[in-house]
Length: 383
Image 1 (tube, rainbow, N blue to C red):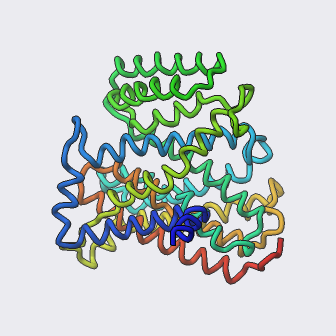
Image 2: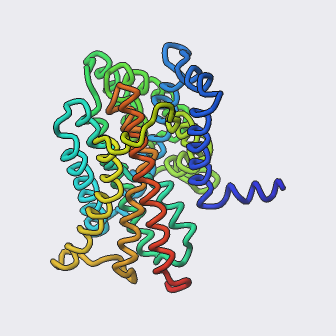
């Protein structure tokens, strides 16, 4: 039994499966006799922050640190190291961001409060999307897997910029100055080729505190810290890893099997008490669901198709148009990042719940249909 469990955690789909189970568990508990305990626990305060805020502001900062490490590696020495590698996934990601935002805007433009959720359907959950592709194995061409990975990484970068630019308010210049001083210290450590983790961890915690108090969302401290962790030109450890790679590998399991599942458990809990079918046609629900399901596939597939027809670039090698469409569908799985943005976009629990319902509908439709399209149109061992 132990060996089977150990083997499960080595599967590329394990993180996505555990995240899905955690989200389902959150939904079940939120609609069970344990719902009062569930919501009161998340709302209880520890050290000046609620449990929910510790998860969303502190633990998710570690998630964003991991995302930042991945971004830096891919842009310096990975799938996005050259402009030629960036143009196709970059333009596809931009279109996949713009079209969902427009759909949401058109459905909610008359509501000044609801319009703040425009960014919710713009995100792609890289863990879920790549997990489904992993399930399909050799039915999906390697070139298409690389395209999806690069697109999802750029999508994460766009989400980070959106959070920084549109969901930060009441900035405190004193704390911002403190964060800047810590950042300068981290840059100096990087330039001096410091490799000891403790010299980055302690300033990183201080940076997180300053960013939290500054009015910028605290999770962005994780991204900033990641940019200062050395990748090249420094001494490797006994495993042959430079600090950035060592950090990335060290955080991987913690992020996949603890932080993201905890986030799903805490944020997916929507009480269906008093829920009416008419709520499914609420502009927020429709804006998020249709933005994820239709907006993502139209934006991503449309950009790749248009780009090839105009001679700007070619679709991934060996991929058919229907396979490109299947991957475009998978981009509509918003889940983690969409839920995260919904918590920033709305203060009202009612509006948060409506946006979560939209995220569930859009993500499930995108994931299921994307899997079916790729499964039915893939050719095992074709590559």
